[in-house]
Image (cartoon, rainbow, N blue to C red; front, top):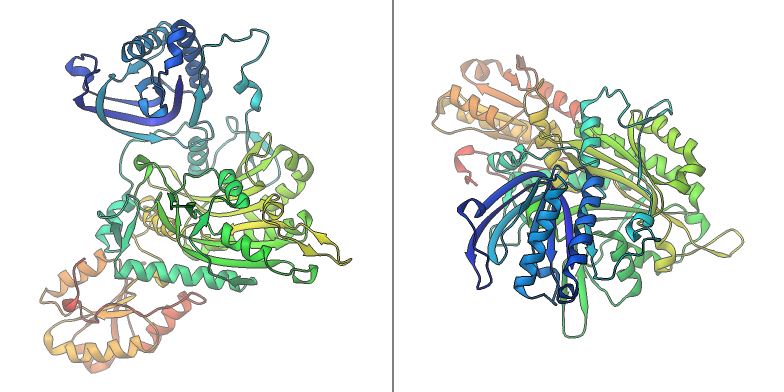
Length: 614
């Protein structure tokens, strides 16, 4: 028997049509839904026919074991033939599945069995914590009573703590949470958060504000960007570029496709653990990259590095990276199959040097929280060996650089390529994390890819490498910004001034004031401010309301008084204040608020009446 067990926020299914081997069902079983469920997708195999009783016993025990670990309220038995190419007789499979259902019910569990032999549509939301996806192979061999089940001895559970700024460690159940969002992050990490099935607000907003939408003719999770959205995306890309180049990064560009016959590529891909887009040609199996690591590491392996160069920073903005996420998990800009990821890799002399650079990069990630005006919660993840040796350093990073309590996850052993990493996450309107910046200490890839440097004694050494994305994917940054407009009830919804597609809108009272409005437009535009003119036939009040719906930060009404005095009647959205200024005074105010941020001109017609409605 093969089974894939997924701890889900919810499962919904609906039968469509029956096959020749379909079981007869009542109308009430033609559709079903259940929340907080362990969904066991099961394929009964030919060898299971030898001893069905053992299979039922072992499957029941395994499902109950996993349910106990993840604390699911319900269990779903879902027949899923696609897990095996050696399927049992249909009658045997139906009998085994029914007996598993009965056995679980006898254990006082809430069980739903999905009908066998029917074509079904289903929707499932995986919780995404470390135990939320588990696969098992169950055989007819009886268990040795003197031996512990293999999964029990694989590893001890991760230790989950809150690390306060003063260095005190708390059990997550005992900590006095002052920040609601930290509790929401931890609830999600531990599988306690419940998904309501609601659509996050940013999905509506990205379309309503004419930023982006899904491309229906592409694979799911592939986005098309409209002019305003492309502008915001490009400004964020410029922002990250400046951020990393100021810190010594050297931009490069590498391919999006790699050969899995390369052992280093294949091993790193397996370590990463993400679902991959793969394709086969006549002689090769290729994968689309899920990050820029492959190209960056190949460049570094082919470069001559010495201790004098360190740290060496390589930066690439991936357009695109690809991850074959499950269709039911793809949503808006939060989880995509194709996305734009800033990847900054830093080659350091050794672990001690890497820890110094790591702290600087945490500062850089924290800076994005201020520049983007979003709120992050932080997860610090380390291996047990690393934490035992570096607990004081971890506490210093939290105290001096993160400066707020963090979720601390201690892994009993190393599962990936890193032994320490910090993840920053915004929390969406539904209380779920949006993973944004990250810094990771990689102690494996240098050896795997053959990256070396010459030390002061001209001896070859393997460096420690840091992976850093200062913002996370550009799409998730925009997701965070849009979600903030729903979670921040104290302020009017808006984008940061430097990211607002239109920063100033000029509204002429009548057509007689249009020529002067154009003069004002030219004066403002010449000072590198994105400005337009609403020359539509709407009334002034409606134009002002339209500007508000577009979240435009400054609105200028031009009438007789403005033509005569050359002062501007400005309405500032941020605080709803109304005041008079000159063009230069307004420009100075905007420049002061956007100091250090990138600028691009508005890629739309200056007259609103000339614009396409996307």
